[in-house]
Image (cartoon, rainbow, N blue to C red; front, side, top):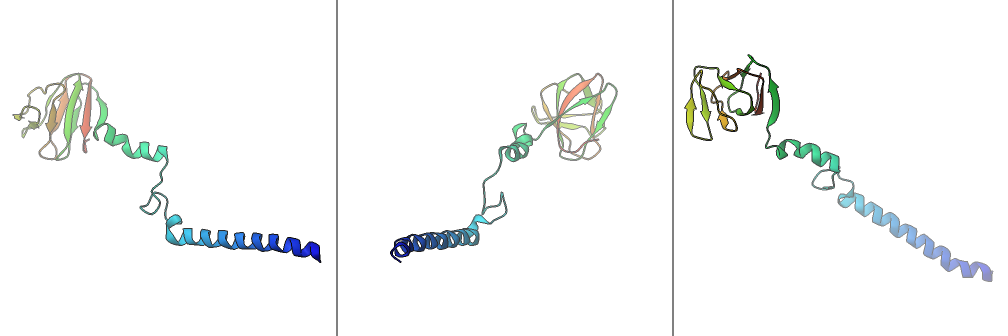
Length: 141
């Protein structure tokens, strides 16, 4: 019996620790640890998720596209265009707004490299007179 009484304190201590661990686990799930991953209740995210979300932000939301010679790019209202290489001209009668210089470019005007152009109305765009690389922010065809 004396052997059992010596171990009695150890068993009680182990049982108390298990009860405390179970209570702590339950409290964690009730008070936020069981939230949807990535939500405000569980804000930890993976590096790959963060890189995917920031991919467009790091380039300012612009997509780099290559347009073959003779092709016309038709854009939605609010789309921005930057000519990086090649040559292109305004393809629509309404024209494009040059945001860099504050000018209106009409149909047939050659757009300048590295300047930002805004499409004010759907269907306007540019025609590339050589293979060109454009950076586009917005919808286009």
